[in-house]
Length: 499
Image (cartoon, rainbow, N blue to C red; front, side, top):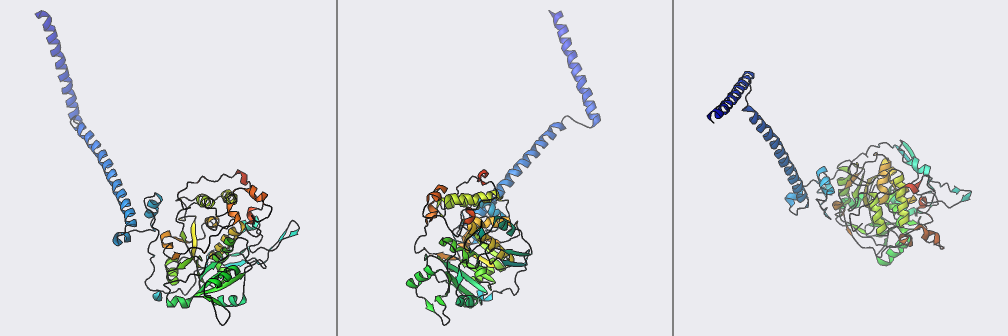
């Protein structure tokens, strides 16, 4: 038995000696090369610690950014003046958090106007003309179609080719811009004479007797002398106003309601009152050609901010020539079109056809990469300097309203798109827009049969001809030079109940 144990013990001893010899040799080699096995774990720990440090630092940095965004969102909605003053509503950050739904836009917010209208310095020079140096208008209508004569239209019988050419901006341009001879909307000579002296204009309009004039408030003595307050009306509205409020007459036969000078447009150019109302609203520069600046406000609104303060805030301060508010609910034209259909603002199939034409011509849904805050404005307040480019934009905008649906907010972004970024404008926050006026109810709600139409078959079955407009929207009934049947409208996400 002892003889058997001895070889086993000697074998283990020899193996241990071999291992010690190998370790000794490896240790010498490691020392010779300047390395140590004890350094490797430290390096591993150091590398892992660095990675963890970077990750923790990134997480902390991300939390700090998120905290800053949440604080910014909170401050923008805070009722505490100190914190609300920290909010920059024109910043990219505010736009980003608003698009994420972290900020609920307030209904009203303070307008950063100057303190005293008497201290405002009015620019002595007009804004320089860019891109368009000379703008003129077609005054005769080419009415011959297929050998037959049709009466002249206020906006003209615009062909698809003429419409396409009008978007190609050149130094000298001639475009359709309403007021075709014998097309309607004529002013009396006494009114033509009066408006020639108006360089600064606050304009409004009432059609089909839906409102009575609302007197503006907080108007300085300087602005009362500087501005002409012009209320454009049709004959139905003038009669309604005379029955419900006091109208005084001056020595020249001019008719006044408080500060408002009534301007009568005889022979309304369209069947649809909503479309008639777009004439003074969009073509202010044509009605009042001597005006250098104008502020449009819808007839159901009471202006509560001095107009000189508005010009300084929205035009002169940042050298803008056109300012309009952002829509409260929508930025995407296809969403707004869907909302118009839901609220029965015009015939649903005609709104779809209108949008198909825009989609065929390349109009994309709004997205944050676009250069404008929104494609949809609140058009009830428009502040303008009447430069050639601004006037061209107004003409092209009106032509779209003349050719298609009378819902002007559907055409605004399209005209901006077709001008290829040449037309710059200031789109101010909706909460400031709501602080410019007090909204009054119409004396009665507007409704027309065409607004309730759900399919084109209803137009075909209509024997009276009362559904189809005879002088507006004719582009919707003129064969389009493109395959609209292949057009698929973008899907719409309904983001609001109000529409």
